[in-house]
Amino acid sequence: MRVILAALFAVGAVNVSVGGKIAWKKQPPREKFVHVVLVWLRKDLSAQQIQSFESDMRALGKIKSVKAMHIGKPAGTPRQVVDNSYTYMMVFYFRNVQGHDAYQQDPIHKAFVETHKNKWTRLQIYDALLE
Image (cartoon, rainbow, N blue to C red; front, side, top):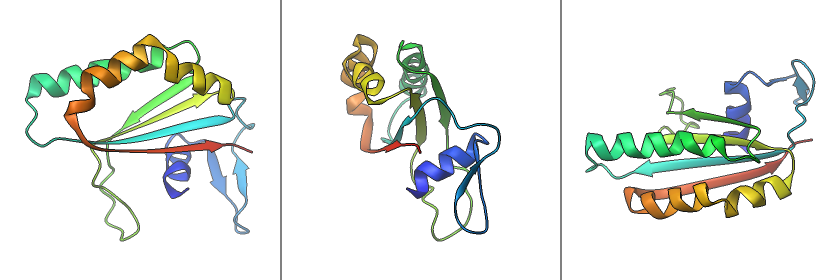
């Protein structure tokens, strides 16, 4: 949950009030399903392999059911509760779970996984339904 909230804070979507409730800065997003993917790339990848990964990662945002996508790297914040060990974070927004499910079956997503799965040592995924 911390990762999901961190992603929402990073894109400026939410504030947390003193009572701990989420307060939307503007209006709540219409996209109600968030898919957060953390990737740990292998340390021995060449610059060309990393460039290929990055290019194909950005192409995932072109999938029709993806309503918004953000890509980031660790901020390096030196706090004990922050995990800065991953290489990339991808945050996808979908209107609903059906949009997410369509994304999983999309040929662009399937090709990305098949092409790049040997480049990461770890993949961690967090899915959430926004209120």
